[in-house]
View 1 (spheres, rainbow, N blue to C red):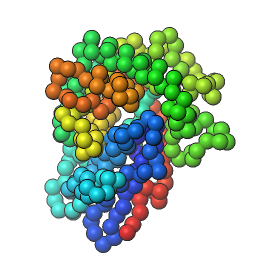
View 2 (cartoon, rainbow, N blue to C red):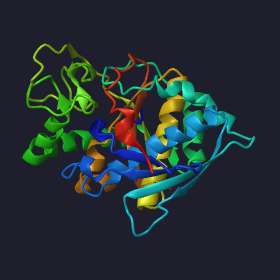
View 3 (spheres, rainbow, N blue to C red):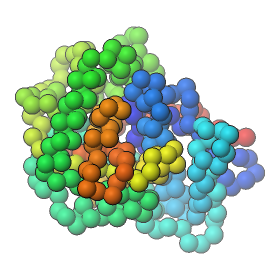
View 4 (spheres, rainbow, N blue to C red):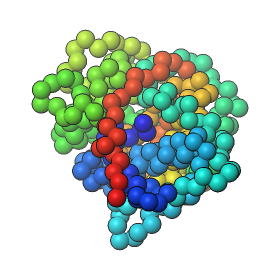
Length: 310
């Protein structure tokens, strides 16, 4: 139930029979070759799924030891998790379990109510626990990031391959679409924007869903940026774990959330997202946070598709 770019769910778990270990693999058949050339988003999504496993283990009273990228010769082998029934399960992790099923991306407008600073501080702490940093940009920087979001929309609109890839992962009940167990379904698209450009990606620019409602989105979204000092696959996995921890913590705090990865998907824009005055070297995700409707649940692949035994 982790978030992933276009809800591709690009993960596979393998339980080694007779052991207490689970291996996490990225699924090369579920990549996004035009939107995620370096597989950064794939690592983020798999890191989020890995974090859900750790939360579920703690909820069941288990401890977990994680080894990232255990085999340099197997780049799709992303992590090994060793489970132990010994006392000492992380109760802070276990407390996040009830948020896993409630967390959904909200593509609806948020209110103008400001998020209290103690809640933001809690989200910063959540990111730090996973070895990442979460910053809330100043007004000028937030405006600059939103401009980059709009620049990314223009690049996307001009790139036929990227548009076709997004359409492949959008489900509007047409006969030529992919499986109903993944992608973005029509009821999770949210309303169309009215007026200024929306901070939410429109997965239906060709208006295959003509009856979608129209709404005014917030002019100045409350955003936060997650980043690391370095930019390696291991950093992407840590950022994915931190992303999910922040999202689950935000859900428990009563916040609605969505992810704004658009400018991070373009090499020519990505470096401009970071604040040069911050210690973050590389931004991996931009969060939109606020108070508003929770998003609709998106479809999930069956357990037999994502879990196997050896």
